[in-house]
Structure formats: structure tokens, C-alpha cells
Image (tube, rainbow, N blue to C red):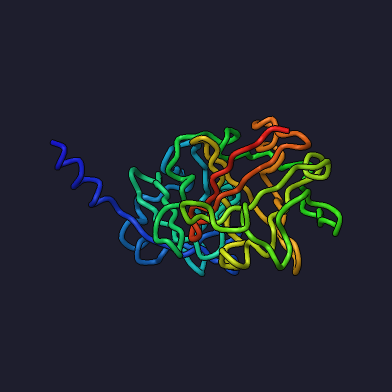
Length: 262
């Protein structure tokens, strides 16, 4: 019986797409071959669901000269699920017009960590609400960012790699961190992480509770653009707390974080 269900799943119609900011921000073209084979089962309004079924997204299908597209509702799905350039997406039609959508990081070949964790939107892993105090317009000044081990002579805690070989940096929070945002030492990032990873979410693990943050940067500084406000509030961070960030995954950037109270 179980084998029958597995075979049924494997035979479900499906297609794959690589997301491109150039062509897919507001609509996504469905492969013509898929439409030719299964178009009769595509209703005017389709539904997209993710692995954890956190939410069902209604997406309208538009059939024009250039082909069949997920149109109205697609950008909402893309933004809410933070799909970024070059993400690989698979669409499995589990029922007429109902698609299970799975996302894969093109560098790791695996789904992002957060897509597999059973935490709801607005909980520790993700927040729909933008961080008011880390807006798109924020750019740190030279004097902001707390007391961290930044600079070209950067070294990790105690000046060497941690005992288990994981690079670590420490920030003692000041008022700018509490009232504004957090900076990540540029020298640390350049030494230990690929610069291209700045465009991807960064994962933070605190005692098994997983969060992610979105970064922004200029030529000299890296700062948290989204996610810091909720993180600091949920962890009761105040001025004087020492935050230790241990890099435990350099590919899908992930830090283990612990705190020393003042």
C-alpha cells in the first residue's frame, strides 16, 4: 500500500524552473511542454503550497501569446517565501491546479534550512513584518556598530580559531545596536565567507532555535537589513550584552550564537 502511494507521488505531473529576477519578478512562465501535456487540468486559479503548508497562495494563470504564466499572486508568493535570483524551484501538481513547490539553493543543491523547519511565519524563524528600525535606507556611520573585533587585523575570540576550528567574532552591544541594527565585521566575512553569500539569508542558531536575517552592505560595512529587531527582542538583548557568533556553516551561512550578560 505504501509503495502504491510512493509510485502515485512519483508519477504526479511536475516541472522545474530556475528563478530569474530579469524575467520572473511579477510572473512565472510555465514550460510549454507541461502545458501541452497537462494544460487541461490547469484551472484559471491555481494554488501554490510549500513543504510545510504554512500558507496556500492563490495564483491566477494567464494564457497569452508568449505562453502560460503564473501571474496575479505570483509576486506575493515570491516575496513571502523570499525566493531569490538563481533559486531552483520544482512544481509538483498534487491535484488539479494545486502545486507543491520546493526550493533548492543552487550552490548546495539542497532546500534552504528554513524550508524544512516547522516554524510558522512570524515565529522565530521568519517574520513577515519589516523591521522598522532596520529600513532599506539605513546605512551605518563610521561610529556605529558596537564594539566588535572588526578591522583588517581581525582575529576571532582570543585571537585564534575556536577549539573546534570554527571562526568566531564577538560584539558587545551598545545603544546603536539596540536602537538601530547590528554590523558584521567586514574583515571576518572576507576572510571566512564568500562575498557572493551576502545576497542570501544568514541563519542564526540559539540553543536550537533557528532564525534568519537579511544583510545589506557597502564597500566597507555589512549590516543586518531585516530580522535584527525581532531577534534582539525575543532574546532580551540590552546594552552591554556580549554576543558571540560562531560560524558553523560557510556555504549556507549559519552561525551558532550565545550571550554573556553584562
